[in-house]
Length: 105
Figure 1 (cartoon, rainbow, N blue to C red):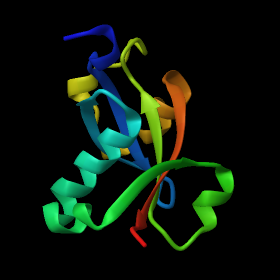
Figure 2 (cartoon, rainbow, N blue to C red; figure 1 turned 180 degrees about the vertical axis):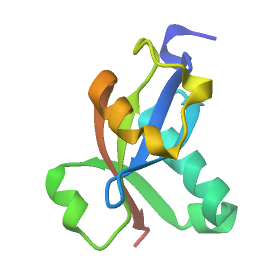
Figure 3 (cartoon, one colour; figure 1 turned 30 degrees about the vertical axis):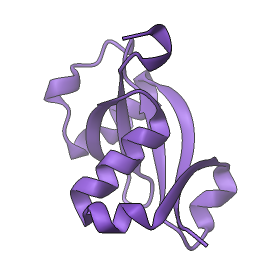
Figure 4 (tube, rainbow, N blue to C red; figure 1 turned 135 degrees about the vertical axis):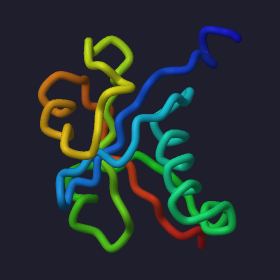
């Protein structure tokens, strides 16, 4: 595996209820969000979506938006995290950004 394809560990948070939805290993944050939605909603749903990084204003949009954090060097126990640990992730891990799942045009 090349350095460009190195897996990282990401935490994906639903910003509304401030819940850690999943801890995933992926090469990019947008790939982590795609994997999360595939688990939650199915492959057919994901095929009709695009995954892009947005800004804070994306949190108020119509499309699902997620806060993504890089847990790779955070010192957090990645396997021991649960939904209630969103605050701890936000305090200790590096924020990658807001990622939006939008319908393809």
